[in-house]
Structure formats: C-alpha cells, structure tokens
Figure: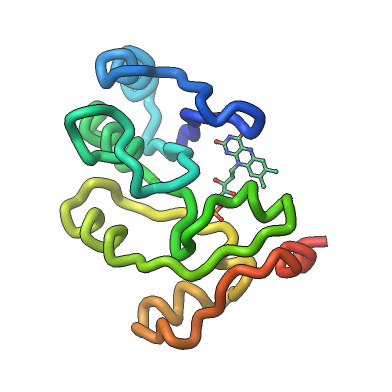
Length: 147
Ligand SMILES: Cc1cc2nc3c(=O)[nH]c(=O)nc-3n(C[C@H](O)[C@H](O)[C@H](O)COP(=O)(O)O)c2cc1C
C-alpha cells in the first residue's frame, strides 16, 4: 500500500501537517507501523528543503523517519510549479542534475512526473538515453491532451 500525503494545498501553499521533523514522525510512524509499504510525499518543488538545518526534501525526511521507500514529486524537469499551468503559464526546462544527485544519495526511491510527461510521453525514455536536447518546455496547451 502506498500512502500519499501533502504539505500544501491548492488554495493554501503554506498549509502544513508538520512544522518539524518530530511532528512529521508522529504522523508517519503509526502509518508505517500499520503497514504502509511506501510513502508519496507531495511538494510543489522537489528541490526545496522541508525543514531548517537540512537540505532533505519532504520525501527525504519521510524515508529517513520511517525507513520506508519514498516517492518525490513537484516540477521535475521544469523550472516552475504546476498551478501556473492552470493560469495559462508554461514552464521552461529545468535541469534534473539535482534530482539525480539526490537519488544517488538515496534520499528517495521513486520520482513522479506530471507536466513533463504531458508535454512529452517519451520524456522518461529520452531522459534515460540522455537525449535532453529533444525535450521541449512545457506548454499549457499540452494539458488539453487529457480531455
Ligand atoms: C488542479 C490540481 C490541483 C492539485 N492540488 C493539489 C493539492 O491540493 N495538494 C497536493 O499535494 N497536490 C495537488 N496537486 C498536485 C498533483 O497531484 C501532482 O503532484 C502534480 O501535478 C505534479 O506535477 P508536476 O510534475 O508537473 O509538478 C494538484 C494538481 C492539480 C492538477
């Protein structure tokens, strides 16, 4: 079972369940003990530190505190968070070097991708092959491909 939780809300970017690692542990430890196999930690920008005095993001803290695999998400491959897309804004390509560094450090285990995949269904294959020059910036029109 994968448990997804969030430290923000669409209408309140600063809505938070936990203000400290201790508060987060109090929420997540019982869930892990109850049988959650992995956690999906929702953030708008995966590169932002979740708490002071550490550059771990929310997925990183989740893995550290529970020992369970963690999924990160939020603006992967792009430089702007996704709600702007609903205001008609695009997003330029963003480097994934920081993402790869974090994965190599085992900060988290899996990565979820939104707009980059809407823009290009072959995003993962191109990234895996190092074909970064074939990636395009996110255009809001690509979200229409869902309807
Ligand atoms: C209309 C809309 C509302 C969303 N609201 C929330 C929310 O309130 N809280 C949350 O954690 N994620 C929310 N999400 C985030 C998505 O579940 C997902 O993490 C995100 O779209 C990843 O996209 P990206 O890779 O383009 O950044 C919302 C997504 C959309 C499209």
